[in-house]
Structures are given as C-alpha cells and as structure tokens.
Image (cartoon, rainbow, N blue to C red; front, side, top):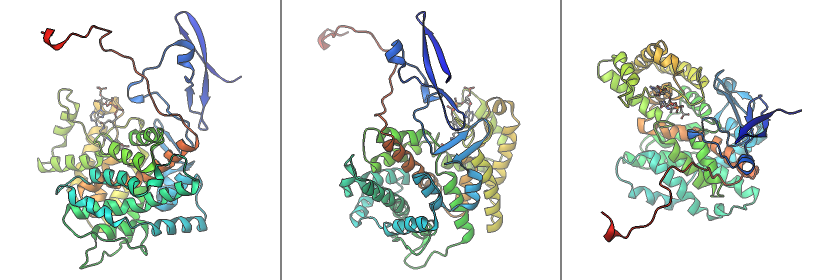
Length: 429
Ligand code: CMC
C-alpha cells in the first residue's frame, strides 16, 4: 500500500497521500487539505512547499547534486555546448546532429530584432541598468508579435516564439550595452556561434572586428550551461506564476528577468564583484568584512555566500572556481580580486557562524571574476545570468503549459483588523 500522512485537527484524523518523485523525494499532497479540514498551510518563502511536479531539473541540496533531464551538470559543463543543453532542457532529450543543426539554424535565422525597437533605446537615460532595459525590451516583443498573446496558439507558433526568444535576447542584451556606452549598435553575424555572435555584438565596432577567442568561447559556454536551469527558484517560479494566468511567453520571461535582477538572486554576481573590489580598495582585510556579515545589527551579508537549497556545497561553484583559475591562467591575467575571493572563502569556511548555518560560496561567487576577465562590464553580469537561464525559463513555462497547471494563487492568514465601522472624515480625530 502506498504511504500516507496522518494529520489530527480538532480531534479528527485525516489521511493525506504521499507523492514520491523519481529520485525518491517525498511530499505530502495537500491538494484537498482545505476542502477536507478547512485549514491551509503556512510557509513563508515557500521553504517547504512544492509548487509543481517537474521532469526538468533535479537537485539535492544536501549532497550538492544537480542534474538537467537526468544528466550530471559536471558532464554537461565539460562536454556540452550551450545550444545543445538548451535543446535538452526545452525538448527533454539531447539533440541528434540533425536536430541540433536545425535548432542552431533556426535561431541564427531570427537574430535580428525589428528596427522600430531601436527607437526605444533613445528614451532610456544614460547609464540605464541593462537589466531594466532588457526586461522592458522582452516584454515589448509581445507587441511586435501579437499572435503570441493568443493562449490557444498552435504548437508551431509557440516553437517560433521560443526560437525568436533564444535568438533575439542576446541581440537585445548587447544592444542595451552598446547604447549605454554611446556606441553604435552592431548587427548579429550568423556565421558565428551563439556565444561568438554575442561577443561580436558586444565588442565589435564599425571600425574593427571582434576576434573570436576559443578560451573566451569555452568559458562563456560553461557559464551559460551552469546557469541554464535551477528548478523552482525565485525567477523561474515567477515565470511559471505569470504564465499560469495564460499571459504570453514574452511577458513571462520579462517578469523572470525582473525577479532575477535582485541582489539576493541573480543580481548577486554584480554585488559580489563590487564587494570584492571594496574589500580590495580598503586594504584587503577580509576578516573585517566577515565580522560585519556576522553582526546582526549590520545589514551587510557576504554576497555570493549561502543558498536556499544547497546546504553542503553548490556544485556549480566548484566547477566555476576551477574554470576561473583556468581562464585567468590561460589569458595570463592576474586579478587581485581572485586572491581576496580565495581568502574570504577560506576564512568564512572555517568560521563557526558560516559552518553552523551551512553557508558556502554559491554559483555567483566566482562567476563575476571570469566575466571581468573576458571583458564583460560589471552591470552586464546579471544579464549574462539571464541569457544562461533563458532556456530553463522557457522549458519550465512550456512544461507548465503542457501540464495544464491551474492559475497560481496562494492563500494567506489574515492578520489585519476585524470588521469595523466606517467613520466620515469630519468625525475622525
Ligand atoms: N552572509 C551572512 N549571513 C548569511 C548569509 C550571508 N551571505 N546568508 C545567510 N545568512 C544567515 C542569515 O542571516 C540567517 O542567520 P540567522 O539564522 O542567524 O538569522 C541564516 O544565515 C539563514 O539565512 P536565510 O536568509 O534565512 O536563508 P535563505 O534561504 O532565506 O536565503 C540567500 C538564501 C541566498 C538569499 C542568502 O543566503 C543570501 O542572502 N545570500 C547572499 C546573496 C547571494 O549570494 N545570492 C545568490 C544566491 S545563488 C544564485 C541564485 O540562484 O540566485
């Protein structure tokens, strides 16, 4: 007989089914809880609540395991290319040669964005943060492709939206950067690979070409793959939540970008490098900053440390730390901030406060150092995270739609005043 959970409320016993996942994760199914008992569950920050059944990503925070569609992240980062892994996430299986070449060609075919969109850039103030620009530009794409607003679209049209998003997001991201520094926009060059094309649009100028570099290309592929999905995190849950109202894919991804921007989520990579630069500029005394992070009267946190689900180590951080050493060595760069990062990691990992709370370096701790080494400006770090996470968001939106999930609508426990009489303003004191 399958396992059940018993709950006793107001002296009555209720039995709830237990759901078991393919990696033996267990959940108490409370779908009928309110109907049966009149009670709801309360779980601020959804620390114990599963929002869906998903076949995309498996992670075990205690063991530091991360799989996409059953494949270990270590293998995918070592051997895969970003578009291959994007295909895996979106369609569920690794592509054959033909499938990958069709996917790559189709994405290459859609890299240009509508010329009218360039006019939006004129309205942003100088120095506008590229995450704000990107989020708005992606939402605006739904107005250029109004057919995407139809919730009953044909499979083929959804495919087109998916390919357009994968193709145009790097173009829009690079354009946002070019405009922010007052440089002319560089059009995509489809003979390049996905990552080379992005670097070309970021760094080429009408006066000189960008020279593709295999070290940079390799590092970029790894970083994008490592960021490609992370099950029901804040931005992905946002994408699924927005999509659950049958809002279109562009708006859902735009909302995901907005959620990712925060420093507790994807914005941490920018915050980490700013923190490391600050420590370096103030003489490099890491213990002072560790003490600040431990002080409960000080809002400062060690950025790039801690994770909601990883309580042992973040497997992505392990891979990135090594990639960071490799890239810097191969490019012959000595970044003093890398020494500070290593010292900080050493001090924090041996400090009782961090050990007790299971706070380890996360994916964002070392990624900024690589981005900087390959020439990506600090304000673009979170945009890079968004480029990597895009196939994951798409896969999760697609799964949610195909599973016909209901509109997301949590409940609450009300703590405000109970019913009281309205008093006209003249009589209020
Ligand atoms: N520095 C100092 N103390 C910390 C930190 C930190 N970075 N992170 C957590 N703590 C403490 C926190 O104060 C709390 O202590 P206490 O139990 O005494 O009140 C305890 O550890 C548990 O923290 P929490 O905030 O309840 O944990 P959470 O699961 O809600 O938050 C987190 C997870 C990632 C938001 C948090 O660890 C954090 O703010 N880290 C820094 C920001 C960061 O690096 N974010 C990137 C996450 S990885 C990329 C991604 O996927 O988004």
